[in-house]
Image 1 (cartoon, rainbow, N blue to C red):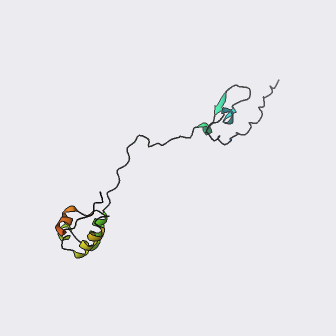
Image 2: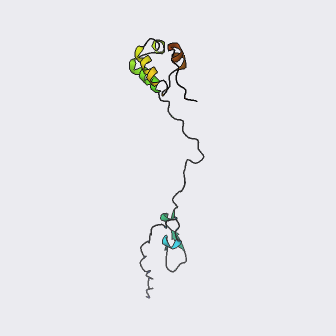
Image 3: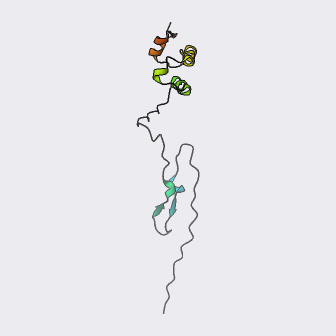
Length: 122
């Protein structure tokens, strides 16, 4: 009875993973390992997957910003006023005189109080 010899393949070398070059290029031999030394086939490892580059949101519309209250509405809310009680509030009138040129104040309220804001277009 003749026993055939079993061919022993040498152990696989460890996978060489080098860092990418500054431009993101790489050579194929960094990521390929021989499947069997006697065969010419190569197995491609998952490490060869390219890193996605660029902005994934390119060309998509920007999300609409959330509606936030204006400074005037915040002051009116802190004072506990409604639209009907704006004109009767002395504290709101003082705030509007001080900040009418800097913050939004409804035009109808400025006309009712006789406040002329400085537009600054000269």
